[in-house]
Length: 374
Image (cartoon, rainbow, N blue to C red; front, side):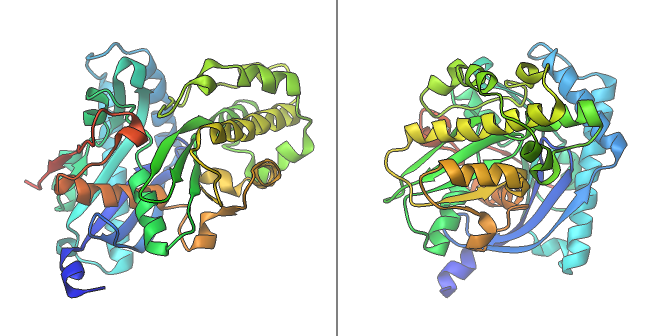
């Protein structure tokens, strides 16, 4: 790294709380907000069962709230507890990495998405950026998605520029695809000459996770064990694939609840999980219809890469090698947290966080709100 480049780099902490409600992923990233990215220490601060139930209740409450309505007292308390959990994650990360507060330029605080309806120009991430800045003593960037939504964008996916920076930093063979399988699955297609395309492909783990919780009280089909035992009901898969979303051109995005497990309600648990897994895989295959050219490889991030049945199926139907992101030296459990550390630096420098080709916004769009400690 040249001295000029090094002078422009700063350390940021990125924070992410996903739709699985596992906890807060926290990661240090040294970056210039462009093509220099050096991931540092990272950890996950797990939620307890009470916090997970609070977040599930918040999702249900948000779904029924009209635009502009005030938060209930319970929702306000959940936001406080969520912010405190993120503060504890930052404290633990600093302690374990032996970094001092003044060594961190920014915290990228994504918060918890509890509602995402781009067609209604609505997205809602729970979390108090000002409170987090005051507790940690570090400037906090939050509210990443709202400017994009307000300008006609989808407000998601939002990690695409970071995926592109990682690929450039690693000298990856292009074109390539980064697939994140979280509650919703999304892709970043990275082509030659800075070409980008990003969109949500369809459901990820959410319908499977919800079914497992409902029938077994378990958070997921761990390692895809039940999917391997079940029989895929092709009629249900084809019915789900007839959803109009799959015919829409990208960029496009989804709410966690846009796809449910209703189509498999009459099946045994094993068959239901196998069928939902097949649906996720085939919806990802449908995404390739929109790529400008043939991809040379896939890197898989998110919790879905741990689902052995899903990964086996993807390798069987995609037309290029399918590898977990760790094979590229990336950290699949912390990629999204790193992305919001990266975006925090870009936001503070008033650089674009989203592009017409990633969210459908009309022009490259900055965003985020910077909170200084009191």
